[in-house]
Image (cartoon, rainbow, N blue to C red; front, side, top):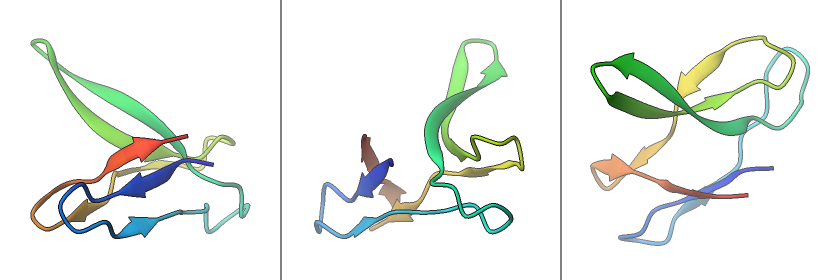
Length: 63
């Protein structure tokens, strides 16, 4: 399970898919032009979300 943690305040979060209750996986989404954004995705292809933010910045991920 991916654990997201705020490098500024130390807050951490884990997330599961609401449809299948599987832990979301950390991934990157290519936006084109060499740009990427960090996402969390369901391992059973139920969707993806923008990874969590805290203190105005992306939380870092450790698996």
